[in-house]
Image (cartoon, rainbow, N blue to C red):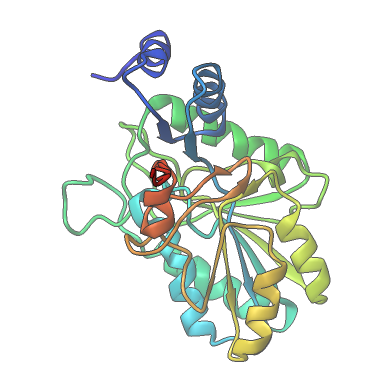
Length: 274
């Protein structure tokens, strides 16, 4: 059983509660932040993501493909996964072909079956929303290519779909697609790739693939996100602070910084007397 919005508001407003934290959607985060603000409580929000993965022309394409497949963990129902792939034009065709083959090789079915690599979405509402988003992308001029075996005719499955030809005016560019639906972009100029990667209301994580670590770090510093991983997918670790920018929330979870978010400093002053 989960708390309703009204129950959550009462919990946050209770004087025994001294802080609120949420992992969820940006809409839910806005409600929690509002209630915490009314109660004058600190809050930490870890919300949605639209992570960009930039693959440079000198990248190890095998490693880049491994990183890109990380998104299919839990059927891509995690906030910090590579959702938008920016591939240098010299690697694009090879990457697209091999990525399509890797996606198509996934076994779709019962999540309780150890051999299954893509299961259903979390709810019927999530299934409906993702299918609507794919259609909206197509209506905006994008190409959506279904991949792999046909999904079961029961359950909350969405057909794995690769979306390409997404222009900057496509409404889907700034939405979080919570399911097996990667978006591929071809770029020739790194500034263009960084600008498009940053052209999002979300800023949770991102990644850069390159054999030149100094160049990759310079690009990572220009990405407007809370975390950037180099030659590995962005992810959360218990000993490292994790949190985003923009509509991906604020504050940090985990690591020393995560502990300090709700640690109140108390000052005791001593004045010696005669």
